[in-house]
Amino acid sequence: MNKVPKWLKELIVVLVVVLLIRAFLLQAYNIPSGSMKPTLLVGDFILVNKLVYKLSEPQRGDIVVFKWPVNPEIDFIKRIVGMPGDTLEIRGEKVFINGQELPMKLKGKTIEDGAVKLIYEQTLPNGVSYHIALYEVPLVYRMDAYYTRIPEGHYFVMGDNRDNSEDSRYWGLLPRKNIVGKAFVIYFSGDIPPLTTTDVNILTGFKQLFLAILNPRPERIGKALIQ
Image (cartoon, rainbow, N blue to C red; front, side, top):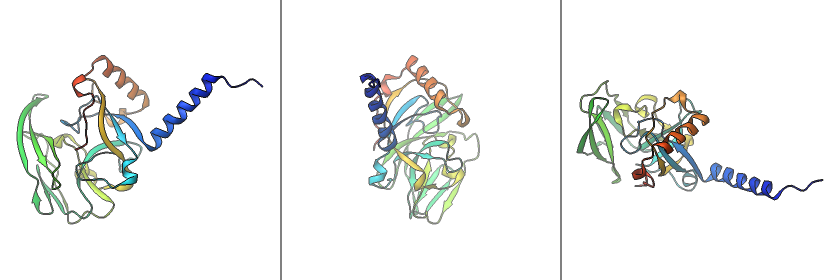
């Protein structure tokens, strides 16, 4: 019997290590839509820590990747705003947690597809601050939400691009078991077109990476997402 070539052994070892890392430690994702603008842009490629929530619980303000409760075959990314035990109310652009309105400070304006967007800094009760985007004149009705108490094992998540995000306002609370991990760094970024939910697959991911390499955004590479 012929011996297994050395290169093949080394390849098998590398593949096993990569698969173990992907299964238990880290996983790469690309951002296909603008629901997390201005924090994450279409064409940002991020690393997600899959181990952190095996050792600790998700925290308010974390940006998490999760299996969409409506269709667990699809991964979503949003920010945790409401925690287990919170009372939460949303009225238009205003968010109230445990009876207190989250403060928003206007930071600037931008134009997107011919419409004016206002950029605010919003601060959560634990002191985590981040930027959100809101249309100056809403194009559609802003969905309200109300929970007298978020039950244990569930979270209320929202996109930072508040008027362009399908999140807990529309499909309800996020179960803890659906959370894959915590996004912590942008490892590459490029200017590429957005995708719809149905466009996302492995081959599309490679295509998006190729386009990003052709149109890189070096100023975003290495940006940390941990507060």
